[in-house]
Amino acid sequence: MLSITSVVKGQINPERPLKAWATNAPRPADERTAVNTRADPLGGGGAATRGKAATIYDVAQAAGVSHQTVSRFLRGFEGIRPETRERVVQALEDLGYRPNLTARSLKSGRSHRIGALTHEISLVGPSRIVEGASIAAREAGYVLDIVSLDSSNPRAIEDSLALITQHDLAGVLALAVTDEMTRAFAATAFRVPAYVAAESEGVPADPRGILSRVGLPMLVAHLAELGHRRFVHIAGPSMWSAARNRVRDYEAALHSRGLQSVGILHGDWSAASGYRAISELAQVPDATAFLAANDQMALGAMLALKERGFRIPADVSVVGVDDIAEAAFFDPPLTTLRNDFEGQGRAAVFQLLARIGNTEVAPMSVPAPLLVIRRSSGPAPQR
Image (cartoon, rainbow, N blue to C red):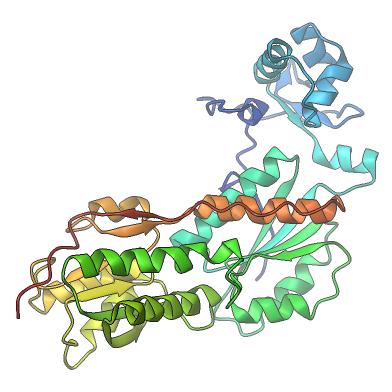
């Protein structure tokens, strides 16, 4: 059964106090839950004070400012003096105030909810993209409603779109996108703005492809400088444009250096698929470098290679893409490309918000990938 989950900073309904909205503000150790006995005209709701929810008037009194100043702060107004802003933030935290988005939407006639469809949320990349998107949405005063697609259901996308379009939303996002999701979004007549966060193919100017376009040549160059000449690529699923881009840029990087690809194996982004890609081979290709399309597949491949008697990196080098938190603790620690998943999620929300506000879409800024060299890559063995 499909359901919509409200996600704030990647967690399910944490109902966190507003101090987390402040720039660089730490998450409070205690999280108080509001007693929503009433809502103020601007949508205030917060921790109970003698059984009564705090309003912006309570916040204004505690901060020693007008309620209009509190309202401007909550709406993201920049022209507030830093010392005033600090007093408002402290009062919001002390009173445990949280905005009531339902009341605010009723007052303004605008929804403050964004619907988002995503695929394979159990994987590291999609889950961190969703986290970045939920943070950006929250900071802009929106709640992200996530529909995670069930890959075992052939009607999952159709059913999910039918579900999500029934709700009063400000906009719709597609995150961690497959080809099928892209086609389904293109064929759907949304009543609100929609944005598909998919990598373009063959579009050099698209910043969403920078990880593959710039990063894969960096990995190949690193291995070539270590003397490697024969490579194997463990690719992601072909229905993802990101996976196809990595295959294309891997092959182009090898060709530009006169290096040889002796095999392309296929996985599904999971560690188990990386393990199967190697363990199910009758014979491991005669290569000294294995480049996996993500870190999780690299992890599985490393185990399978070691089970077949290969030493890493003495016999073969293995590298990945993404620099997940665990990559530094693989055995041996993994050489990889650092991928800004959270930034991708944020950028997707910014693109959608520009469409919601009918404003010019700012150029997307995506950090260049960073090569992180660890002990899984070493000099090519002499054969």
